[in-house]
Image (cartoon, rainbow, N blue to C red):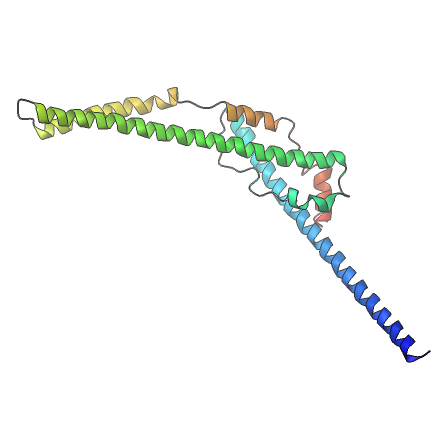
Length: 214
């Protein structure tokens, strides 16, 4: 066997070895990425289910004033291609349904908070408008009265009006405040048949992929 043939065999062997090593590294990295993705999904789902429980409790008390975010981060859309061979059609749809409904729940909660903030701002505006009117009336009285007006008396009159108005107006806010029903009704709808993933076959498979089932 001449040197050229030997060199060809050696080059071929080296190429195969390098290719094999690169493939093994690729498979290891892919496995690590998939394991990390499964772990991220599990954490998101577990956190989301805990938040859903708090939302249910709030709705059972007929309100949606909860300081939670069901899905603050979402990695399913970015990593779902890694699990095309792991989940069947029903499992795939359950995961997608959970993430979709979680996003819709967060929108309902956010809308409810916005409505509350708007109410607070309107209450503040109404109070300032009425108090400004009282102050304006006091100034006009002091300016246009034919007699000298005692400043302390004006202040006392203004304070009495302002405090009486504030007490009456604020005490009735709970009775007459407007609470939008749409976000509550929407949240109730989204919670209907919302899948419980951590205890399902989805959770079991994700724990196995993430190597958390030992």
